[in-house]
Image 1: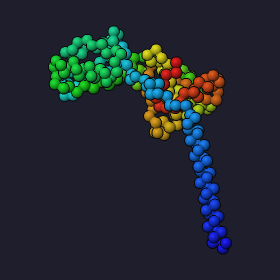
Image 2 (image 1 turned 90 degrees about the vertical axis):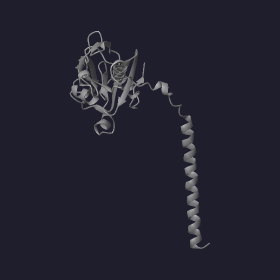
Image 3 (image 1 turned 45 degrees about the vertical axis):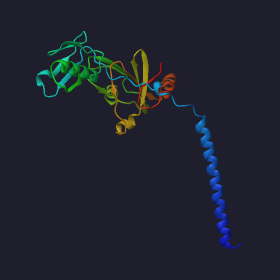
Image 4 (image 1 turned 30 degrees about the horizontal axis):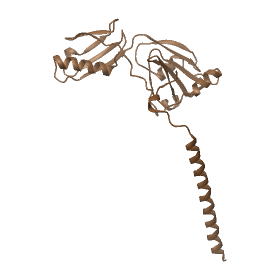
Length: 232
């Protein structure tokens, strides 16, 4: 066998060995994949409802082309607003999009042809947000306007030295259940993820090496998926 033949034979042998190894790795990967538990059904991935209007909230209502029917309104303590021509309508418990649809239907059925109605939340009535964990000043504070997660972190005087900025958990009550979602502040600051809205009643917990083990174990169990999921 000449030198050229030996070289070709060696290359062929090496290629066969590599293919055999790849096949083994693929087989092992396939076995690993099939051993994983099935994905949670969509019904378990419960997302939070949009913010529900509350008494004393302040709203901006705009009806395209009808300035006299547009304006700012504060929700009465009984959850209603006295709208021009329509009178008192209960708005508490509705989202802004639901109220837009209600007003479009009411004005459209009586006074206007296909009105275009938009409702914007200007101020949220005083509601408490709690922030704890690895922040410089764990605290509770009132929010009276839409607040983002980063703004809420600032209320706690920023992240502490031992904070894990890759895992910040928001706990939220909804429909008698407790929901949780984990967020990566590094990705939010880099513009890779949206800065989520924080509402009254939310509890924000920043992960960190100084947290008690029970808290750390709990936070680690919340997946960073960008949506809220029922935990109990």
